[in-house]
Length: 72
Image (cartoon, rainbow, N blue to C red):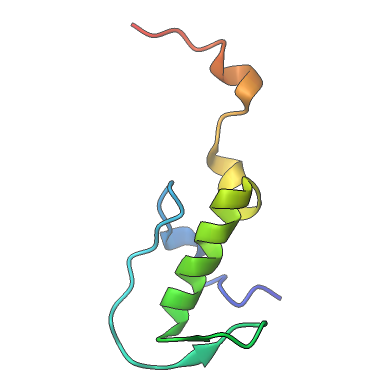
C-alpha cells in the first residue's frame, strides 16, 4: 500500500513536494515521526529520486535517449 498516493500527482520533477506547515504528526513505516503526512511523503519522494527509481524514474529520459537529443 502506498501511503503517499494522494501526493504523487503533486510532486515536482526534482522530487520536491510543496507542503503546508500544519502540525499533524505522523510516523512512517520505520517509526520515524514527521510534522505532517505531506512532509513525510516529500522525504520519501526525495529518497526515491536519489535512488534513481520509483516514482521519478517514469518522468526521466533514459540515458540512451539523452544522447540522441539535438540542441538547437
